Image (cartoon, rainbow, N blue to C red; front, side, top):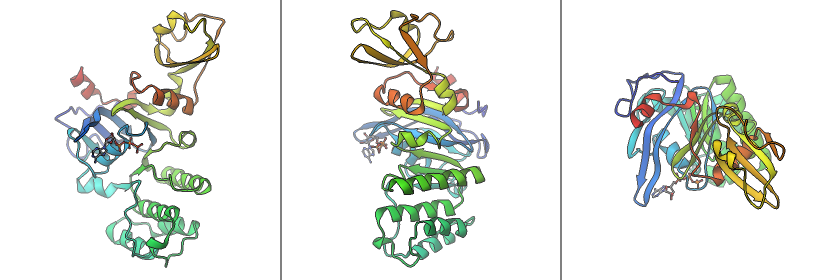
Length: 326
Ligand SMILES: Nc1ncnc2c1ncn2[C@@H]1O[C@H](COP(=O)(O)OP(=O)(O)OP(=O)(O)O)[C@@H](O)[C@H]1O
């Protein structure tokens, strides 16, 4: 619980809710000409977490990251980064944003690019930036325009890490990296974040890679929040049931639980459910087997069922907004 006493119109004084909250979103929405890309999203991302942001194409991930990274203004609601508005000097200083398109100057050399990073950022860590570039054997004297897409991504990573941000926002940053480099960059990300307590918010479609990296999760679909919270708590809140169905009919008492999705294949069916307060007691015995889903199974269930009822763990809730919305 954040306990910051802030509501829709009162996101709190700068500095609140304090450094234990990296991002607090209060009912944010974004409307483009074609319609709403994001609607009424309220959640909290505690500081120091490595958070995966997951959702189908067009779900609103880039829009949400753009609002947190001060590239876009929300149409409704407010968002705070370490208690401050994204456009504030304080939030800007503490945040690094790595977008899908890497806006680097093509005519600059790698060295000049890092020098610019050093000049623009008071807390610049030249060694960290150079280490990342050198690990990929990218020549410091090479012009950005002559680098491969993956090499440019590496330089963009170096710029982001060199800033030593408290919040690192990554929008599908690794899509053009080969699997080995992606693995290496994920390792660097994890090591840097762990060593410096950096909060990471990273959108990705690589579900299998999230499992070993993220300890927090935000899932959005069709512009709305579906899941937010600690990965372990979210997994433990669900059960993956497998069993044999009778003429396509699932047991009626399945409806006592929150059913995220059901699928049948031949005589087998699987169901991803959030068990009610008494657990799975009362479900038809015998034909069922229940296990805790892994992260990929959980995410696929929600990606296939964008209308599933939302679940936020206590640490992800913005209580006052819920009170206002109730
Ligand atoms: N500048 C814009 N003008 C109009 N519509 C936009 C704009 N940017 C995004 N949208 C729309 O808003 C919705 C959400 O887009 P967004 O890029 O945030 O999704 P996403 O989850 O990042 O998708 P992807 O996984 O494909 O990158 C989409 O329907 C998209 O077409």
